[in-house]
Image (cartoon, rainbow, N blue to C red):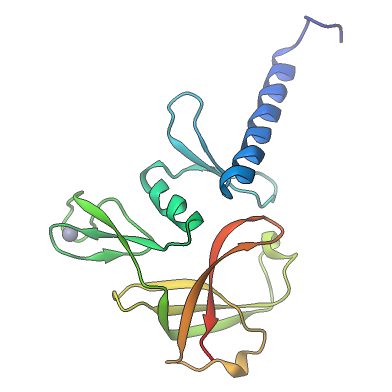
Length: 183
Ligand SMILES: [Zn+2]
């Protein structure tokens, strides 16, 4: 096709190319696939796991969570009215229907409640070795579900202490968090 005679499809492809290179530059500069929406300025999360489609979901209301994660902090929210703590963070309290919630930093210590080894992985996780997913309770009373950095499930015991580490997991190359057994 000659120059200056671009179809709408060409223009869209070009825009998407620019968009994804912008995402790459944001990943380089802040370690997260998070970009502002071109029109509204709201924060978008550009999922890097390719299945049959790439998810782009609005995380504008909880972008503080991801910014803090890149700084090594785990945030939850707390309802100013009833004091309920939420993780994953929620911006509206489902308990008293109030939206006066504040961000709080959570401890990265947990007590293991339950765990399971994942041998049959969902398609988008097929490139990982078998992994263990666990749920642990923080002193703040909320539960955090995450991978546990341990290959051997026999080394894990319900009630044991874990610490949460914020890591960049490969090959996605962005921040997430994992439970690590405390020796
Ligand atoms: Zn509340």
